[in-house]
Image (tube, rainbow, N blue to C red; front, side, top):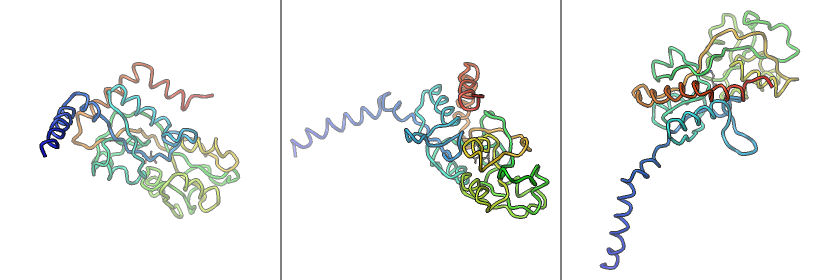
Length: 251
Ligand code: GLN
């Protein structure tokens, strides 16, 4: 017993001291970030490295660098992001999430970091769909809980709105003819058109204007202020523009 405690006491002391040391505190400085990581080019898995990549992923890592914290990405379906944030499964959402009045009643949004809009996507041979007017009587595929979903549901006369968990499934529905069109975020639609030029085309210009924001729980005012300060710093340093050009610049 004596020999046992002679060993355990110093070990416990070491554990207690290391827990209280600044190093241990620094090691805890990780922010957990929820994202639907199937939304290229904003968030997706790099097939070669298996890492999460995309504009948002690089932006949030850069924000983490400025804040001096580690960033850990937690993959969650888009429709489950806000509930999971509120339950404390992570502390931040970055997921090409549009700032809407409704969402702003339950979460707090950062300053906008991206301006975009919704478009219609359809098959290249579909010529009868030129605008939202032409969706009357049509089947429209959307991602569940997205602004594309809400917009489709609000369009008068749409035949049917089919919500899918992932945007990829909505696009597949269009490609195989299960839906006549999809409504989704412009740059994601363009990315699909680029990847599948024979199967998908984007119709016209965006018919909404939307701003993406980073979300935190409403009471996390200090965290939000740090995120906004980091965002401002990245804009001022030119790092934001570098990221923008990397992902959306003309090549
Ligand atoms: N911008 C859209 C929204 O906020 C879609 C986002 C997404 O699916 N990741 O609803």
